[in-house]
Amino acid sequence: MADTGESQECVGRGDGTRCPYGATLDPDIGPPEYRCDDCRHHYELDCTEPWRRADEDDVLTRPTGDPGEPGTGTAA
Image 1 (cartoon, rainbow, N blue to C red):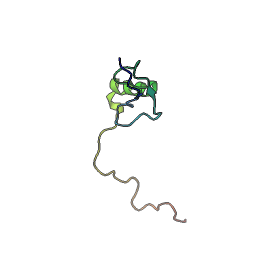
Image 2: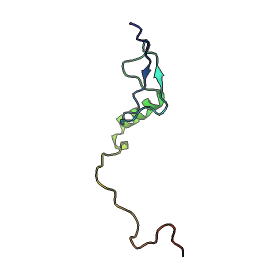
Image 3: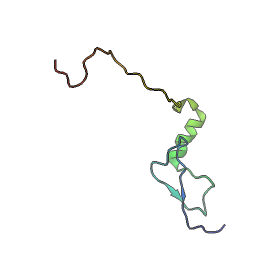
Image 4: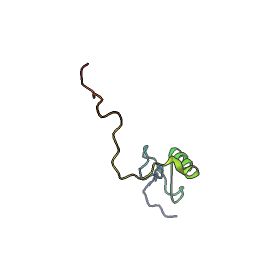
């Protein structure tokens, strides 16, 4: 295998975000898609239990609580 001189970056947890640790691996010894131990742990949990992933939601979140309830900063 030719030496490309570039390290291989962790592909993340599989939820579209990058690795929180910025882990890298030497490309000469690594697999085609590298995940660090922490990202692989979360990725495997999500593959075995898909309900762990948050659903895509494009609607506005409804407020909680009573509309007549006094908010923060109101004196009693």
